[in-house]
Length: 397
Image 1 (spheres, helix red, strand yellow):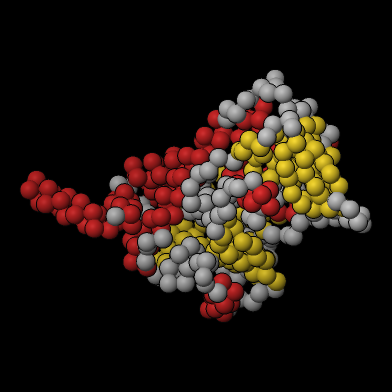
Image 2 (cartoon, helix red, strand yellow):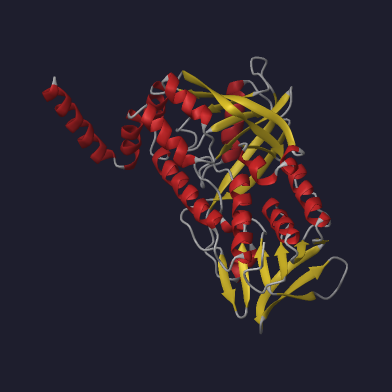
């Protein structure tokens, strides 16, 4: 790929999955890349994550090296109802620690420098380049660094984003407990419970081995998420072996992940850019897509079809979340009741990272989903629409 602009020197702040993937993509194109990570080594806190097979399209064999289990079916529960969705292609359970290590090694193999023990302190323009300071472990004075472009991949509370005036997203608490699997749960099956009086999101139980898995939830911002999950574990007769937790950025609207600073360029990727699909609060695949789109923009004079597609995808998930946030137990029960065999097949055929295709197909198979969604978006209007449809049907009969 030819260079669409003159930048040859990029510094990445943060050894996240999106940061390491950005380093790999740029280094592969011959760009001089340095990645600065505050920790002494690339060894992030372990956390089990479930992703769609879309990650294989992005990463190829690198993704497979981080896979610890495969999920072939989902069981959905609410108000005594259950629906089972078989997946055409299995979801992948990955270990976040393994994924980031694999990506960092891939970046290094193409010539990227991974500099650990360096904490980003601040950035300012300096003529045609950017000048930034990092504290170096064991040194009394900060080191001064320069680059033509800086990529903030430093997570939810990105200092790069804060210093450059990007909007700070609100956050959502994620907590999950490592548990022994119930005897009646197959290791290739994930369970999801919709309990709207406990959380506007859902509880999940994802097996990551033949004997253990993670039970977790996304809590409301002001809720006591730890108490909520402990109560749910007790009801299910499960015991937490260890807990894993994180604060996830809440995507509310798209903002450009690029700022021109003097003669240099600053970008954000991953959680720093809030590239999270808020229907499920998954950010691995979307974070990697954001990294891919950002490198496309850097190499093609600001043009990126991937970023345009990601914007549409994230906005569709925001719309889905807006609907689900209005659902109570009755609406979730109705949703399960509307899952005809054809609708269930559609849910299993298209994955969560192609929301436009999934929604279109499910609504074609079961048009009453559209009315249920309208009820969530526009409660009064949906009742009027439903009444009009009933009157029209009555006249036709």
